[in-house]
Structure formats: structure tokens, C-alpha cells
Length: 137
Image (cartoon, rainbow, N blue to C red; front, side, top):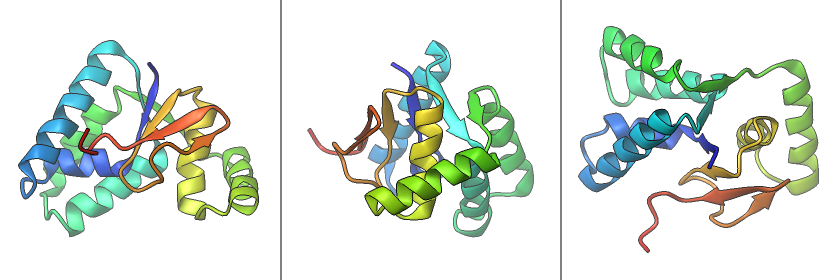
């Protein structure tokens, strides 16, 4: 199943302070890379780089290495048309513009689900279901 991967999954993959979430994030990334079903966006990559440098304090060389790995996923570019569609989604559904950009990238890529801890689990936007991959079943 094509899945859009939100920034928090990438951050947990490099964050050792929550081992269970780190293991889950690493498993998700490996599975979607192996199956070719993972999708990211330029926004997610930028957010990851920022958090990795500032919060996780990863060295720039390691962040660059991670970006090289993530570049092997399908990456949706934040183009003007996508931003305009996200602005409409923001106005119509009341989600933050940052979240609307993520959701719109998932819609544009034809994903069935958006893996995110930061959005309402179970919400559906134009056929894309929000799934919290860290929720305890």
C-alpha cells in the first residue's frame, strides 16, 4: 500500500530516547523502501534536516547521508500548484497549512495512507487515511 511518511517517522528513526518508537520507525522505513511504497515530500525532508541538526544534534555529514537514503523514496516536490491546493484544504477543513501541505502531497502522490503521529488518527482527506504508526493496538 502506497504510504506517505511524515517527518516524525524520520525523526524517530534517528532518536534514541524512545527505543520502541525508533524500532517501529526503522521497520516502517525499511519495509516501504523494500516494497517501493514509501513516499516523502521536499517539505518532510526539509523538516527532518532541521530537526536532525537542531534537536537531535546530528552532524551535517550524517544528515546528508540520511537525505541520500531518503532520496531513494518517491519524493513529491512542493510546487506552487500543490501549495495552492493545500491552501484550499486549509481553508475548507481547518487544518494547519503545514499539515495541509503534507496531506496534499499524499493526495497528489495517490497514497492510501499518511503515516503520522501528529495528525488525527483515522481522519480521511480525499481518500487518504491518517494512520498513527506508533499507536498502541
